[in-house]
Length: 62
Image (tube, rainbow, N blue to C red; front, side):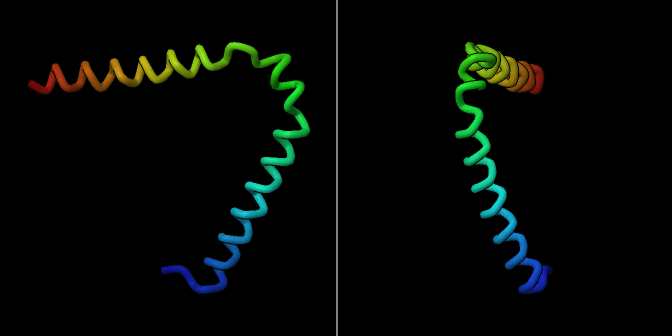
């Protein structure tokens, strides 16, 4: 499906992308603490909403 060169490129790109993302996050960690306090509440709300959608789907299927 993919050639060996394409797979090597994809693996190298993925490793480089992850390393750059880690360095970028560490550089901006103080900014994240200042501006994004309490964002875990939004994440919890999102998961609750998705869970409710699954519950509704299960009940309406029966």
